[in-house]
Image 1 (cartoon, helix red, strand yellow):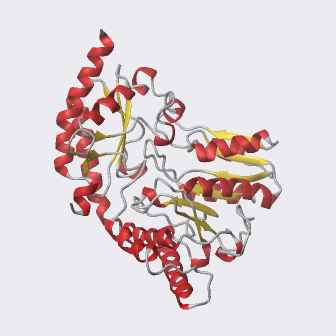
Image 2 (cartoon, one colour):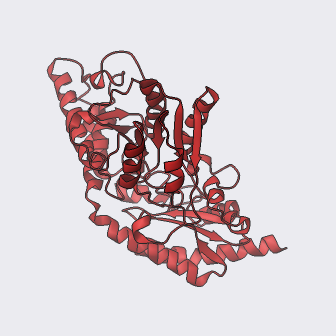
Image 3 (cartoon, one colour):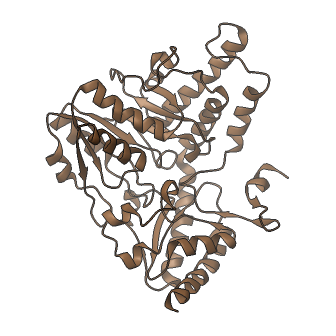
Amino acid sequence: MGYDEMVNCRFSNGTQKMIYFDNNASTHVAPEAVEAMMPFLSGSYGNPSSAHSLGREARSAVEEARALLAGLLGAENTDEVVFTSGGTEGNNWAILGAVELTGKKSIITTRVEHDAVLKTCRRMAARGCQLSLIDVGEDGLLDLDGLRAAINEDTALVSVMLANNETGIIHPIAEIAEIVKNNSDALFHVDAVSAAGKVELNAAASGVDLMTVSGHKFYAPKGIGAMFIRGGVALPPFITGAGQEHGRRAGTEAVHQIAALGAAAKLVTDLSAMDAVRQLRDRLENGLLETVQNTRVNGSRDAGRRLPNTSSISFEDANGEMLMNLLDKEGICVSTGSACHSKGGGSAVLEAMNVPFSYAMGSLRLSLGRYNTADEVDTALKIIPEIVKKVRAFAGE
């Protein structure tokens, strides 16, 4: 079986074609990333801190990947890129490090952040920091006036995600950076985990101080990510030990994963493929709106204000968990929201957007990727309306 065949099949009930619309949760590893990884799992096993030839070979791979990540992130210099284990580590590091670096006690974020940001901010609030949570409107867009009002001279950090992982809504990062810099000396952190590989990042040009990405969201393996740290920002290390990553993150570099991350970054820095992804997303979304009554898209539908691959769609008087489970039996993988807390209650993001309960509890997140096809969308458009009908009928019994 070839690579593409392998990632498109599952074997729970015989061999069944899988339609994967959960790319915001994770992506399959691109063939280019697998190819880049394999040499460092076999013959090229040197430690990149070693001075011998195998060590130099590993170091070369790490630095080549760092340059590719700098291109993806929009960094001005490669030394502004530090490798991490992923978005959660990067977000924790940014928040805890900013408070330690500045000595200030005020943190500002939004009500629709990922738990890796929200829970870390609440952890700091429990330790005596002042936490301000900025509202969003029904369209999912950030209340910029509320942000301005929350900033003060004791603000250590403002943390705003570039794009929401559930709705795909994009926040105006350059405008937010200007607000932060014009009103404080705070550091500005951007969680770009859901945006990387889907829209241009431009960390340096946008005025961002810290930006986090996670490889498994853009066709690299799990367990590897990167963080942009603007030159001159002396963020304290989150993990201490030896002097790897120029003393900023201790621990022997995972060369195989870093090489794969670099290859994936090279792949997705070219955004031309996202036009086709957007067309597929719109075809799926519009088809569901046309064929299923009492259905809504959550958040702005302005193409410039949301990711090209993401649709948060709600079916009134349906149960999202039942929809997801029945679709899974038909070979269609979706989620009810963020995969990190999809087994919990209703979506905090939709609650912050004041989505009516009758719709919010029947929500699905459909997130497409570069490997989805028109045939998959057409198949889904035949199956999803029938599943919604079944779930609604069950609820009405």
